[in-house]
Image (cartoon, rainbow, N blue to C red; front, side):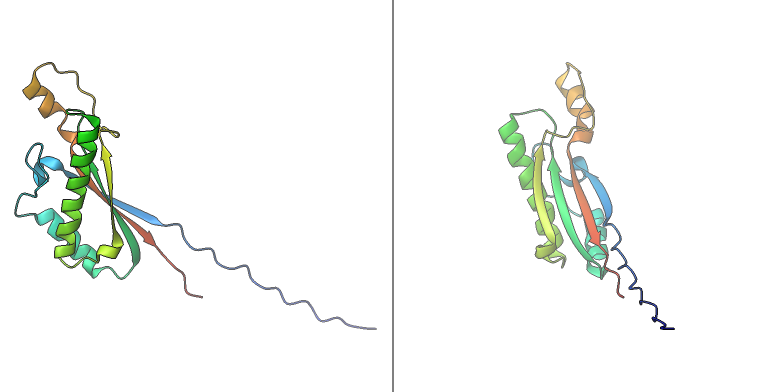
Length: 146
């Protein structure tokens, strides 16, 4: 009788966990004057984000998205949202965050959070405030060690 040793079973590789997303939304009214892209000072929320990113040992990419309301032309709003995203990026870099981790994106008026139909300009500006924002999104890539 011939005995065949059992064929060793190779365990399937452990799949990497899906990336984790963390998003922080900052109101443009806290960061900038209306229709401006220079940061107000001080910026404690951005300081906190910079400190958190500086302590992180995880492999991550950070996307900074600038958003505007619908007031003004679409082209103008794209440029304004890019300048605002760039201002936040430059601030984080000045606080020690690696610029290689940071990507900026201009969203302009394309992703509103609210829709307002106020006819009075002052009320409309106030109503559209949530649309004027900067989002900082961290995508963490985790790797398992085997």
